Image (cartoon, rainbow, N blue to C red):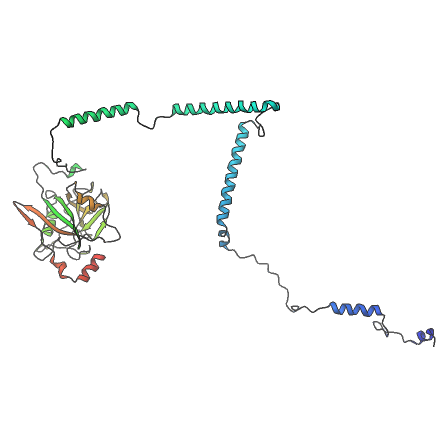
Length: 379
């Protein structure tokens, strides 16, 4: 059988099907089958997130120190650049060189020395003018000689005076002369000894009472100093409020914490504000508190500075005799937010005629339990 007969007897092939496909077609299909791979997440639909990113304010604070240092460095560079620009402007635009015409190389060194000399002379002249215009910061010789003459005159006068063994009695301090007693009026004085609770004695202050202008208020204060028949008195009571360099408050004979109100026995009508004759215009004043019901309960204040905000609210009825070391000590003692240290009135005394009247202890507070008394003090 020849080759031609075999070709003629062969059946016509269908499209896409070969009885004996060529070898190159078979190799191409094998390569395609090898390269085709099934994607693992082909069933997942694609999604594009178009929302803006979330704002995190802490992101700006991460490198705040670096940004601050960079900002300071940039500021310094800008200042230096501004100074360079102004120098160039003052030199009329000669930035690179201060010579309009470059001299010969052999004379450049000499010209630089000449320019340096001119600059030095100009700076010396400006410094000399500044020295002439500046005043001396120390005392001149004439002032020192004058002061020495005054000191020598005082030394000679004191040497010729009589010798005094003891210092003279210091004059009473009174910034406002309105508190001075009228001629012929004798005001009583009382002495109050202060001490730390369960501690040492701090000292004694002398108080002058204005009995000529506030007799009822002073009588209430004296009755509590001496102690009444029912056991109420200032002795053994503490100062429940101590504001340094401002005022102290004390005199609560009922509860010893500022919430009590004392009423004199036998008095049907309580004592109201007698008058507001004196203002709180100087330190060292004694004023009695007036309640909203226009009643005085024996609670008093010791002021350490002028307090005009207490005018027309408290009645000024006395003053502390100054100078007084005890008064100076208590003025800087205490804390507005704490009752420590607990300072109490240890004893009182006043002179009536030729005898001394000593104040009685407060027995009403002693009748209370110690726990109740400490809780009121700590309040």
